[in-house]
Every structure is written in C-alpha cells, then in structure tokens.
Image (cartoon, rainbow, N blue to C red; front, side, top):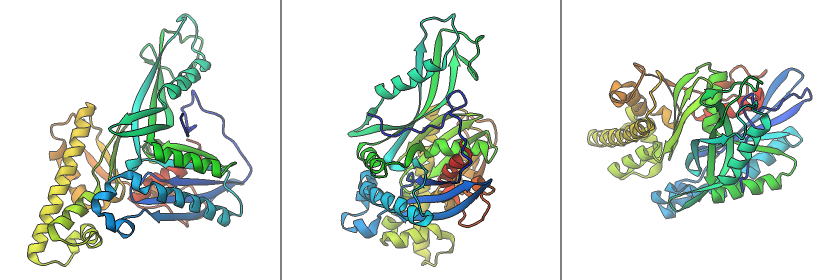
Length: 407
C-alpha cells in the first residue's frame, strides 16, 4: 500500500491553508546520496524566524571501509543510518523548539528513489455533463491503488509521493471547473516518486513513532521545480542535480514539469577515477577532486589526475546526453546546476561548451547557472542565521520554501 503522499497540488486540488497561530515547521532533505539536512523554523505574527539547521553525513569509507568502495554503490546500505539520523533530527528539533513541530516535509531523491511523469486517463460516462472535482479525486485514488508499487530489476519500489501537475479535457488544458467545460476523456498528469521498499518501511515506522507530527513527502525534483517558478521566477529551465552517486534531471516548462529522470553517475565517479589512477585513498582523492587546479602534485601525477577527471566527466556528460536524447524534449535555454557536483569545475566547463548538446533539439545557445539555496530562501526569514546557501542546499531550500509559502 502507498505510504506517504504530498498534499501539494495545483489550484484544482488544493486545500486552503491558513493559520495565524505561531507554528513550527521542519524540512528534512533525505534526497542526497551523502548528507541528510534539516531546517527548523517558526512562523506567526507576520514573521518567519529560522531556528536550527542540522546535517548528518551518511556513512562512507569510515564506517564501511572493510567492504570497499564497491559496497557503497547500493543505496540500501545507507537506510539504517538514515532511519537513525531521522530520529535524532526530530528529537533535536523538539529540544530546540521546546515542543514538537506541527508539520514536517520530507524530500525524497538520490539512489533510494525514482521519479516518473505519469498520467491517468478517465473515460467519462457522460460527456454532456461538467467535470466534477469528485471525478478527479477518484482518478487519483484509483491510480494510487493500482500503482502502489513497481519493480526495477531485482528491487521493489513503493509509491511514496503523488503530485498532480495538470489536467486536460479531450486534450485541452483544464484550468478551472466550469459548467461550460464538458468532454469525454479527462487526463490527470502526475509527478510520482517511488522509494525502495525497505526505505518506505523505515519512513512508515518513523511516521508511526512520531504520532501527531504531520509528516508528508515530496520529490526533491518536484519541490525544486516549484521553487524555481515561484522564488527564482524562471519558468523554462533544465534542472541538473549532481549528487555523489546519482544525477537527477528535470525539465520545467511554465507551470509544469515536462520530464524527470536520473542516471546512476555522480561526483563519486570522479573520486573513484582519481583513486584508481593514483592509488590514493578515497579521502585524499576527494580532496584532489575538489581542489584539482590548486592541488600540489608531481607533474606525472597531475597528468594522470587530469586524464582521470576528464574521462569521468566525459562519461557523465554522455549519460546526461543519452537521458535527454531519449526524452525527445527540446532543451530550454537555461540550465540550473546544483548539488555537490556543481562545485566541480570540470563539470561546469563541460556544460558551458556547445559540444555536449550540439545534436540535441534545443532553442538556441544554452546558458548554465550554478544555483544556490540562498536564491530560493534569501528573503523568507526575518533573521539571517542560520542561512541556507550553496548548491548542496538547493533541495533543502525548496522544501523550506514549500512549507513557508504553501506552494
């Protein structure tokens, strides 16, 4: 059965939000391959006040060194740690605020989740009658029941989040329910997120443990797309999140998400390439990756590292091209790059070149911008600390923006 659903929906489905009392809200981003991040704030009396920002690094070579680098490729390795840290996060927030938050929004993504754009078609019994809201809710309920899980390879994924993107009636957009709009086939377009079964069970256990805390979930990609439109005021863009193990990609077009996908290749592939080329351990290879242009190395080692980095980034670009090419969607003119991998100069340089998209359908020259969390939450809070900033905290900022604005 489905576990968690976001209630963030377009105007056609939205519930009215409004609470003049002071309330505490918690955003938790567990869509990263390397770090869990949370942000606690309160709002009331016309002000929003940032209270606490926390982060936990997921286990890497320190805890799992005996199993080697290859063992870190499976997202299920980190599930017990995520469960433990989630309990610690909520507990710390309660201690900080003096009471339990009224609401928590969880961002999903990374290796533990898969996003899809799906649609449910409803053949109406009577096309001469207006579309009723109940019909749309029935369509959503039916979808949740019939698509509560899916298989990918040897893994089972549970449906964790469903966000309606839009509705059409006989192929024409339906922005409002009016007596004049009648037709035969209603289509509801959905942004769905599925999580690994063990991960979904952990989320359900946490929800049960913190009874009384309103806990909902949403895809990081969906939250970022909404924040890009609402806070950054960019209505057409390609979003590329480069995580440690996974790169997540989506295309935003005005009020909707046209495409969402991912591939299992991220910044850690560059680290691993350096480690294999130099024989250095993971920690030192990571340091060289982040400071490659300034790292002090023998000339021969520098050439080897350069070759390793260029090869790994070329493989990453090839995977990105394959994903976008298979979508068949025209590239928008703006690309927003974020996630920890956005700090890698080699990736930024590769995307700044026209070579990578020269044979993909596009609207012209593509400009690349590194997006930081501050672009989303910069004006939300009365106080300035703790601040959300940097490409690693874009998803966290989008979750906070959604909680604060109800969008």
